[in-house]
Length: 113
Length: 113
Image 1 (tube, chains in turn orange, cyan):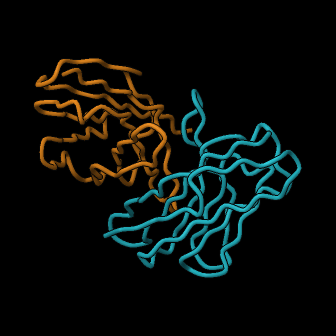
Image 2: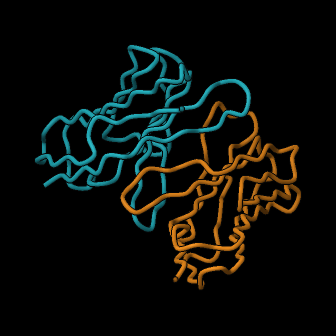
């Protein structure tokens, strides 16, 4: 059974710091991996999607990498800002599945001014 | 721009009431999903649908039913609401082709008293 783990559960950093959020999954048979952002009381916003054949994706200050064989993904945030404070969730789509995502518990990030 | 909307942001219902949560997407997506999100348990899939009038059970379907009469609309029904169904409910949609990226609505915070 696929399980997704995100460590740490919470992170507090000063503004301007570069940081890495981690996501690990137990079964390497995935179709893709998606990173989301969730603000308190709100829905999920898709940040980046990495296909199983890709190694990384970039969007602005965000860079997500994928190492399928070791079951790991990282989300790198450069030059963090207070507006980046949110919960970040990763989710894997198992291979051969119609659409179900398996979510991690999330990492809650606080960026202090 | 991609758009998933949910009928209510906040809802308060009494135990035993029948509750309808509606989700509408404007992207002509084949797949639609209902999740619930609870502290410490993360996001869990309740039901999903990959076509009109088609549905499949997710991880926690007990106490819920769904309806998809039109492609753009997916309804979640709580036949007889109970206090343990107090939660944040999130709807999502995705295409059956290409990246299969999943897009989420803003969520409905349901309180059952």
